[in-house]
Structure formats: structure tokens, C-alpha cells
Amino acid sequence: MPRRFHIGDGTFEDQAADLPERLNAAYVEKLRPLCLCRNPGIPMYVARIGDQFVIKRMPLSGGAHDPRCESYESPYELTGLGPLVGSAIQIDHATGCAALKLDFSLTKRGPRTLAGNSGAESPSAVNNETRKLSLRALLHYLWHEGGLTEWTSLWIGRRHWWHVRSHIVEAASTMMIRGKPLVDRLFVPEPFRAEDKTAIEQRRAMALAGIHRRASGPPRLMLLIGEIKEFCQARSGRKVVIKHMPGFALFIDDTSLKLMQRRFSPQLELWQANEASRLMAIMTIGANGSGLTMINEIALMTVTGEWLPVESVYEERVLEKLTRMRQKSVKALRFNLPAAQPVAVATLPEAKPKPVALYVVPPDAGDDFESVLAHMIDARPDVRSWIWRIHDGDMPALPQG
Image (tube, helix red, strand yellow):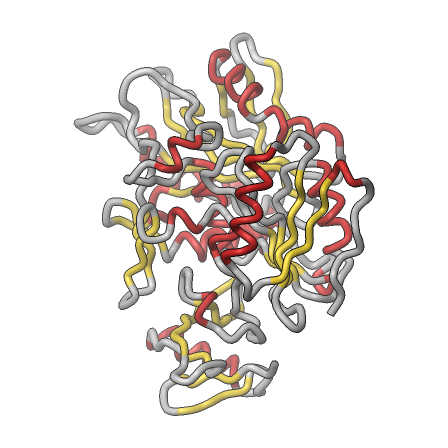
């Protein structure tokens, strides 16, 4: 459907020639556009992505939009986001910022652990009254809010690291931890260019300077998000090489390495089996006594060549089909939910006559999995369902239109 926005004292079509100029002014004046897919309009905000200004939906407001609107999102209950809304993620509707509760520390206290996927293997961790974001769940939330789960074949060949980085940083700018901006504790490497090597390294050193300071109290940690290039042998543990960070020494000790290999074996196996896939990492890092940068906690996420998160070879097959479709699809994410808990693989929010949720039932799924899946489907009659039960054979045709 054509999109219309009310900005300041005017109304603009999304293809209006003067809209970019108006968005520039709205960004400077901190005006909040209203999406007119509903009456009254739904508040949005203006973000700067690279050298462009774009209108984005407020955090977790997708369900308020008309299903025909580009900003519409399928119900969060179909993914791992649902249980976190209102607890681990609390939205300040006046500012549009999300206050996050984390289940990992950004200060170094005692022995290091690898809790980056806490909650992913234990259903009880999800059902606690006080829910918090695991390291993996934070990466999922940044991917979701950055719009990196959305896809249409019109974007083939157009999503690169600088796009991904810009969207992650922009999403993080709307998030707070303990009353302070998340972006102040987050480093995402900028695209590396050999001709700008010195300036890039200086900016990186300045951004990470906090982990080397020895002020009073426990040492500070920083969050780092990047694409793993390789794990290199070291005398002890491994050296972790992050793309766009050549020459940067980052280490993981033997104990943490073994825990990572066990806990994230599916992600590592998918990455190793498919040369087109990428391995994303989110980690907390700090400096040890000798000044080396060490990984404190880490979580991994495999993504396709289009930067869409993937959990299994079955999901890979579904995404291969979706990425060739002009129709918009949205990859659903697990966040804190354990692997035994069903979640939608993806949704087709623009499908007619109703949005569609896509599910895959793995070959080892039992009666409990089927029971929970049936309950999820019954609870949302406003969403159609497509199910691929692996035991039944090849993948059914995807819904069209």
C-alpha cells in the first residue's frame, strides 16, 4: 500500500521528491513522523543510515501498523521475542528508547565464564519471573530492530557489511543499559580500507580505550560484534580473527574455547559446511594484566550470504526459496528460547488474505513440540500457518501472494 507520513505541519507520500529534504530537517529538529496507515497515526522516528535519512518504526510497534503497511510486524508471540517484551525489554514510549536487562556483566568480576548462550539450553531460564537478555538474545534483538531480518529479492547483491554495521549501530542508539546508552559500550568494526588504515586503527583504539584503563573498581568490558574470519592456533587457546580488523590481536583461552565449541557446535558446523555462510559473534572483551585483549564471554550466530540468521540445514532450504521471492519475508529469531521450543522460521507479513508464519518440525521433535506448536497456531487465528514436517518428506511449496 502507498505510505503517507505526517511530519511537522505537512503530509508527505513516501515517494515525494521533497521527502528527503524534510527528513533531514526532521532529524535535526527531532520531530517524530506519524505513519498514516492507521487513524490516528502511529509514531515513527527518523534515523540516519550512512548519508541517508529514513523513517523507521518505533521499537516493538510493528503490530500496531496496518498489515498492508511496510512497517507491520507479525505477532512477537511467534518468536522468542514475545516472552521478553515488558520484562527484559521495556519501552519508554516518550523517547522511543528500550531499557534492556542483561544476564551478563559488562564488568569483569571473578573467573571468566562462557555464558553467552545462557537460557538457550534451559527452559527454566526462560520461565523465570525476572527475564533478562542473554548475549545471544541481545545480538538477535539488534538484528531484529536493525531490520536485518527482513528480505526481498529486490535487495539481492545490495546488503554489505557497511549496511549491516550502520543498522546495528542505529538500532543500538535506541537502547539503554542501566540508564546509559548501549552504543557507549558497543564496538562494531567499520569497513576496512587499506588507504585509511591509520585513521581506522586510531578510531578503533579510541573506542576500545576503556578496557585498558585501570580506574578504581572492577575492570570494564566492552561489547564487540563482528564476523569471524578464522580461529588461528596460539600457544594457549586460539587467536580469533575478526573481519575488518586486520592486525587486531584477540584471544580466547582453552577452557572458553572448548565451551564455545560444545555450546555452539550447530552454528560452527553450518558455517564450516557452507562457504556462502558467515559466522557472526557477539562478545564481551577486556584487557588482561599484560594488555592483551581477551574474550570474556561469547555467543555465535550463523547467517546466510544475505546476512539472514539460520539455525539448521532445513532453515537454509527455506531461506534459499524466500531470498528469491519478491514478496517480503521476515526471519524469526529464537532469542532466549531453547532449541526444543518451536518458533516460526519466518513470516510473510504481506501475504493475502492474511500474513503467514512458516514452521519447520525437526525430525527429532516429540509430542510436546507438536502440542506447543498447535497451541501457538490456535492462539493466532489472524495468521495463517505453513508447516514442513521433515519426516513427511520434501519441503512443501511456499505460499504465493
